[in-house]
Image (cartoon, rainbow, N blue to C red):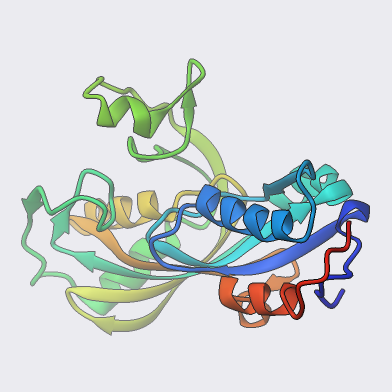
Length: 237
């Protein structure tokens, strides 16, 4: 559906947003909600299907109006990611949200070792989510508890990894493509890969390239969405 000020949002609209770096998923929802208010929609339902970390970019599906009923279905679909993992160091959040807390040797790591280690992730596996994540523990977000200084014990969760492929080797950094089930933390894969290689690991970039049939290459920036919706100042409500 082509977006315009006349789009019937209450009937149900899904927007494929190319989430910008530094935005939380909630930030994106808030930004689009503000756009809709300018069009006269003050009480319309809006939500997202699948959280992306602030330092990640790519496909974030925003569901509006009746489309909010599709959130669970959209969240359950496979996801694809492109990520850069830096070996030889760890951070508390498994990405660049926090500074390096420990360094490890990485010079012993070979391309063959990386490819073999990635094969061990394929299939149904259990992973430990990062402490700094949106996982709920007794009703509270894990990252809120961690930032408050509360000791958090994360339980291992089952996920499915369909593909984990080395794309480029620039040690100590490597580019990897991941295709996985919902609930998978690519940050945890980075941490676990470092451990399997006798080193450390954390993400330095993450981009969701696909969510189900929605592609990042077809996503709209927030600026593009605003331009499409604000072609004129005519109120539609």
